[in-house]
Image 1 (cartoon, one colour):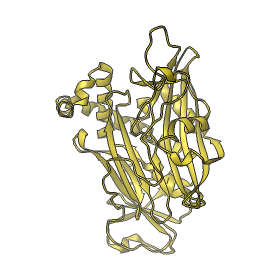
Image 2 (spheres, rainbow, N blue to C red):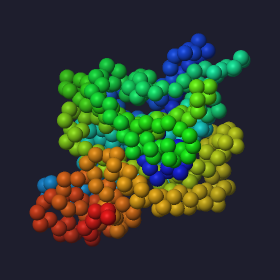
Image 3 (spheres, rainbow, N blue to C red):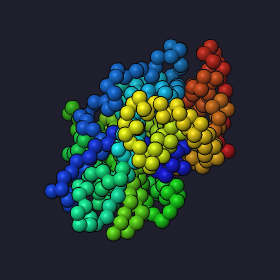
Image 4 (cartoon, rainbow, N blue to C red):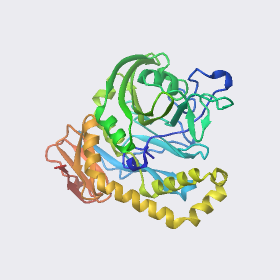
Length: 392
């Protein structure tokens, strides 16, 4: 899902995209990314939020957090697991996949994770690709409109302005009257964005902290994203990526930074779904959006080109295996409060919150972070647990 496609091993971020604009709107940035949302509502398919704590029912000792693997399934992609992530027991989640054949980013996953105990909510923000050039005579695409699958829009380089224009009107309405507390750059992520782009470009990555009142209580929200620009004043392609937000009552974000970073670092698309996504992007380039929009034809097409999709899936797997060490290092650099550990059960590396004495993984792929002296999870009788070792 990342742009470019070789960054598929990194965090996959996207959601529904809507455009506004008319011929009279030239000169105004009216395009808004994402559906309208009121604070506290959940985007997605509207289905009940499943509990993440429905599991063994075993009570771990105090100072222990159990993380379990969760998945968002895509019915249109043969009910394959699309997005997977780690979630602590007691948290809730919801998500869906929306296929939009009129855009070059042909699918937009929506996911939300929340903790009823603390009020922490993590949303992955909708993203899009943009293009800008001086319109020639007779050009009729409005600002904010669709031009060859990208949004026709002048580049926005100020991060606070981007949040205000593109997310606050719809996806993040609580920020419309919020106070911007701080803007921090994340140069490691900007460098990675440019490296993956593979051509001349400028990039910057940010984490913005906002403060506002909700139900009479002080809240905080961190908005993280990266912007990349390629071209010049006459013709510019530009992109937003790696975008997510975390909000909670004041003090909870900093107190739970490791938990939040663990969830963010773990979220990725599966090779099976990523291969389907890349194949459908190729269909977009070939210009067969009508078949993509027809659900029945779409399913038949996926079955017909099974070999091609499997080859793309294998390519995704190989890319991720080759970049595991680099991705683990990058996540450790850009996310606060996590340490990378070698994972003998699931392979590769896993990022878990700092501040605990021991870290374990069991044969079900669950993780425990514990500071309880003398605690051995093998006494819980819910699988064989192994101690994790920090990444060397």
